[in-house]
Image 1 (cartoon, helix red, strand yellow):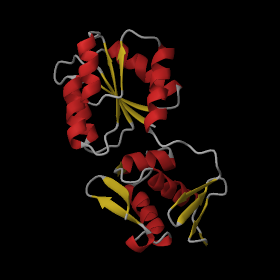
Image 2 (cartoon, rainbow, N blue to C red):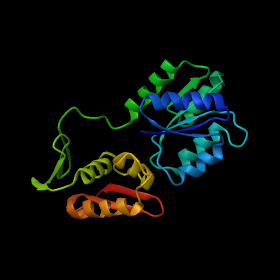
Image 3 (cartoon, rainbow, N blue to C red):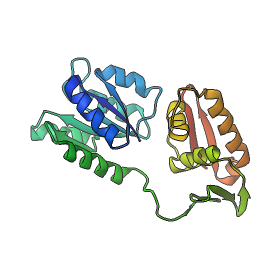
Image 4 (spheres, rainbow, N blue to C red):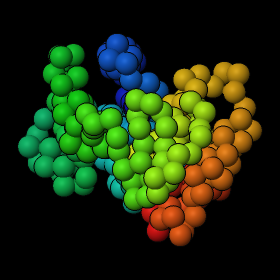
Length: 227
């Protein structure tokens, strides 16, 4: 789970960042709205936490930009000192998933974030097996079958393939994929990722007649599409 936080108040930024790190989320902090916009052009975020009042670009302007240009749009929570009911309504109508008036306690912010993620993120199923068309994933055994025929994948290939299937039609950046599957990108080259993508595309026969295509998103990453 990768969360982008933008706030021009350093104290608030550090407080929220530490809170999410404690929850096991990967958070990236920004003091300027335009820095977040730049990051969104090359990275995938699951959730954005936006302050409203900032000197260069307001949280509402960022929300409108994201709604207009990113598909599917990441979830957005406004975290702001503006408490007027008209402001709350305007943000929710514009597409925000929740609105938190600060100051607020850590326990409430955490609960509200988890509530948004439960509503909008794919649920982690309790069942061992999960089917996507002709593909069946065994999440315990880390194996995949295609029309009942086993496909041999390495552990990393399985994790990468499942990540694509669980996020169909969502563009995933190379950085996001490397962090999610390899946990660290410090010593990892994009060539390693591209090789793994090529292997699962071939091994899983990801083509139209099997119901799925794994597309390259130019200068960004990859997207799995159902046909």
